[in-house]
Image (cartoon, rainbow, N blue to C red; front, side, top):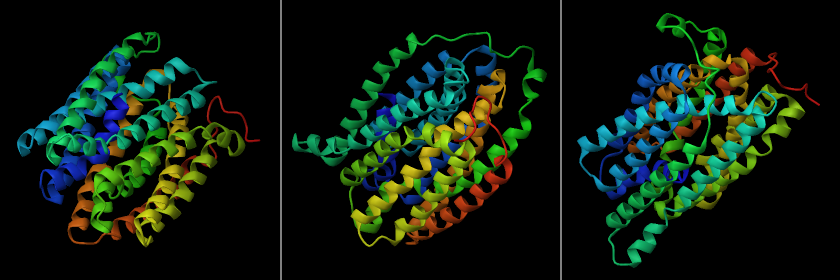
Length: 383
């Protein structure tokens, strides 16, 4: 359920803030930026804490906090309250990012790591899709006599409550303490995997800047470009998330066939073509299909890249590595959301897609240069 609530929240947020609450596009972009910058500033400390003291409890507390944030955005229109909630959301995301991938890598082992990451990403993508599909519930609430704003509040309260309740399942997850880091602060800041992290985060930051100009703002773009409300565009993005989940199931086979690095480059390269094609679409229906194809191909690479990273860094550094890469992905992604929203406000509805596509190309080329000849530990040769 946390994934369902998050899927609804991140899909609907631009529409909620601008169309329902009446804020300007720049304020909407600022909210997304605050979420990102607070996540960036706290990610590395949380990563170090996760490596030293454990990951499970941190994941539980961050999931509860993120669920509560959905409730706050559903009931408050106060700009100050929303900015504080955005700040807490980013901090909670930092804790979740620092703990989740490291915990997953610990419990899976090298032989099953890619398959476990793929299955987890599949489940999470399906949950995000269901969350986006839940947005039309506002129409049901409206049929019961609620106004549009009240219907959105009801949706946010409902999913927040379900998300908080479902976090109890994480209590059943066990965690080994043998892979945690020893020593004090000096030992914790010296990373054996520094070279890998610099290369990985540099390539990721470029693609993140491009994605931030478009992906978090799609419900707003569909409304500005085609006049489509969130009750219709939300399910379309939900379809995209579900197809992403299905696509990830093919990731292990693709990695076995081409190798992990080649599979990442192939899927991201194909996604770039659809990024360029989305704003050129003559209708909402075609744009939806093209954008879904973009998401399908780009996100097939996500479990592969995360599995690759966890395989290239030592067990005791995985929490820190996850936090560093997440932070340096989120930082440019948050900055570019403001840029994308600003372009939308100027009526430049196609420009963010073209800039994003160019950045995708640069990132993919750099990733290939850095990792084209790397063999991931635990990976069989391509067949």
